[in-house]
Image (cartoon, rainbow, N blue to C red; front, side, top):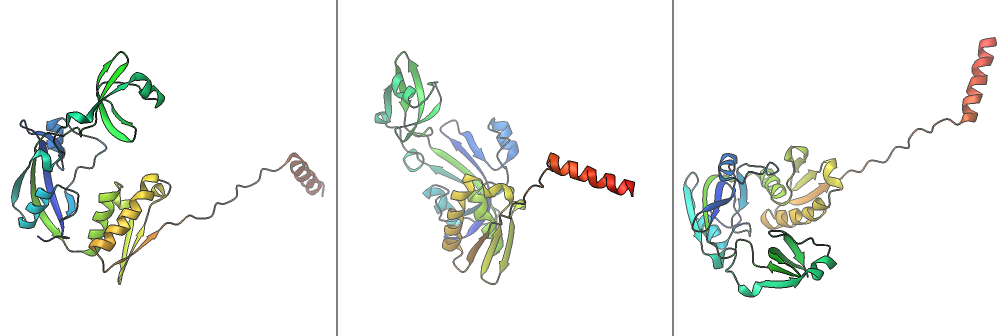
Length: 249
């Protein structure tokens, strides 16, 4: 494999000495590991070799990987989610959290002073927040199998859309004509704030990894039809008079 190659893999990621599974592309493994999420789409995963989707050690393994073979990669904490730093555990007053409308509960993920943390202790007047990554200090055990290498340009663009936006891909329309890929987005994405951010990443990644293609994103907003006006009482009276005249004739 080479940097920039699009590859489809199946994978399983576990943490620590007990190798607790935290992510997988396999629905059954997710169910057996107690991490199944009904909102997550379990399927073979497309990634770009050399991108920042995975840790450096995993990317280096991709470069040596062969299609159809299984590989295991061990990533030390310092090269994964970082080592635990006691300085990243801070004590806050209850009033500080109340000002941000945060109800303190142990285990709750919060954002305070533009930092993401997790509440690990609640005592009268004092809240202890851990700003280390929740997986800090744990080694990563990554197993994967390369299922195929993707060469088709349209399939590459579809993969980039899926990496940046988790849609029902069948609702999108892709059309490749000469050196331009047109992406027609569905109605439910047009007013989705997540899509507003995702489309800029999609365009940038297509230009970076498939530089021979121009990107055209089509968002059609048809004109709004005016609702039919309800007849006024005066109009109704006139209609009644007209009908009465016709009847007499």
